[in-house]
Length: 276
Image (cartoon, rainbow, N blue to C red):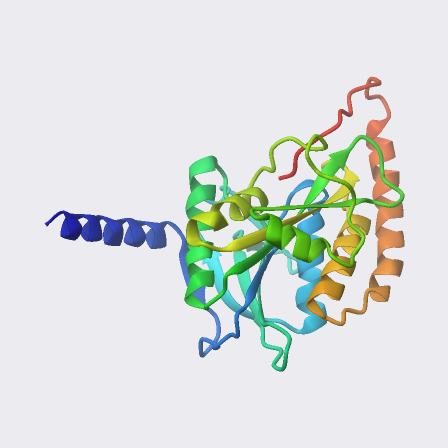
């Protein structure tokens, strides 16, 4: 009898979770993926993860699988290039490679969940989705905010097991231990990495240094993370395509932030030691 009560509770809890986060399929069929790796890159400090995953999606020709919406997303809309508004959305893409390369699920979007509870609910929903595709491995990407623009951003690595951290660090350039460098890893990037253990999954988190200003776009940090993932996952990315764009965008952003800084009292830009 107790077993039946527990099963009914779990079914209701899962139904409630699915209602909180609506997954809309945008493809005609659900692909069969081979041991896929989930790579997350949502907006945060410097948008390091978002830039990296958005570039990856375009470069490898990933296809959109789901659009995710919820009442737990911020109560706002974006104005698109056609001057019409769009609701915030989180998207799941996939890429089938064939051969020895493992398939990918990519988590991208405009926004993150608005509060702590919805962030937990969202992360559990994503972990369940990955499990349905037979995946057991996660890569999350975020930024470490600094008080100045880093010329050569360092990339740090952490995870939920020593094994996956050592596996991803092997043969690539990753900086010294992250402990003592940052505080809590905030948002989906942190929670997905931590909650993966609840589903018997492994998760690794890459954090790249960037300027901790809300208007700054940390493309150099994104590029450094992409170099690592390109080598570890055999993605064959054309990273040279980023170089010119990085230079143009960073020059414009630095000019803009310098203008905004005029008139601001000295010492108001503080170091941000966490990611979002």
